[in-house]
Amino acid sequence: MTDSEAAPAFRLGYVPGVTPGKWVRIWQERLPDVPLVLSGVTAAEAPGALRADGPEAADAVLLRLPADRDGLSVIPLYTETSVVIVPKDHVVAAADEVTAGDLADDIVLHPLDDTLEWERLPGRPALERPATTADAVELVAAGVGVLVVPQSLARLHHRRDLTYRPVTDAPVSRVGLAWREGRTSDLVEEFIGIVRGRTVNSSRGRQAEEPPRKLSARAKAKARAERRAAAGGAGSGGGGGRGDGGTRPAQPGRLTVDAVSTARGTEITLTASGGAPVQWNAVWSAQWLTLSATSGTLEPGESVTLVVTVDRDREPSGPWQGRITIEPAGATITIEGNGPASPEPSEPPPTEEPAPEPSDPAPSDPPPADPSPTDPV
Image (cartoon, rainbow, N blue to C red; front, side, top):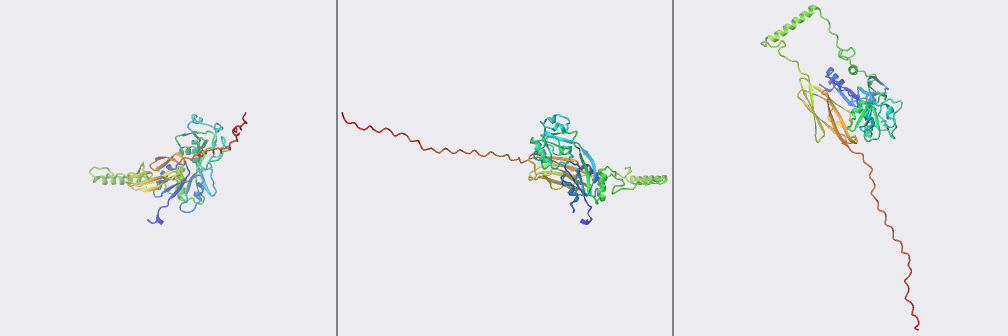
């Protein structure tokens, strides 16, 4: 097959915290010949990924609302509860849920990539706004303040020294599907149908099938007779074998996942088995992790090893966790590490005070001179 004859791919972008795994599995079941390529984008990058031109442009993006909708079509999908991330020894950790008023005495961090629609920010403002949610989580761990985010982001940035609690009156986070106006292709329509729960036979789908025609009683009887004749012919040569001739349907493809830490990094080995090829893809949101491959197809019995490395220039400071999910196996690999600690200001070396210069000694009275001789008596 030449490049011009190759099946088109569907490129789907998604923002941190959104997990498209369920929809990816349905896509692979319905369109096994059309690869779905996943691409993680930040909340700020999501609209631009759709407006880009060229083969790397996204066909659709799962993003958080509100977003810049200029030139885009958007449908809402679901909402998320907002939670507050706090250190485990914070007073909030003792409650099951809190209100925004309970945070009045805390410094509440407000990162630049926050998409919650606040009418009035709770708590006390920080001196500066962190650039990203990941940066804000680091500040929470350092005891600088607390952070309100959608629950999926709290799970994504989970740390052993932090916890989170629902904020009952905080704005919810809305997640939607966006695509470029005027580019509602058959594949986009197919994915819209998947996220909206349409069945494979829906009239809106790309591969909608005609409803089966009803057969007359005579046609049904003829079909039954043909099936019995076919079953009898297949079984007669097998000496009492099964009516289906002893054949079994091919088993579906399966994917097993193994991970091990090596000197090169974390190595994830994928192995396909069963009776059909397996299309796989990797999903992750830790911006500092790099995979040697993110998707592919394995024939039964084939294996591939992915190498996960850490981009030291983007690695967060202190302890961190990154999760990589392999679909369709649904296996999640957690990678932990320690980034470089923020340098602490060093104290200047003590300086020696100069010794005082000796002062000129005060003049003392000269010793008494020998008495002058007296005239003899």
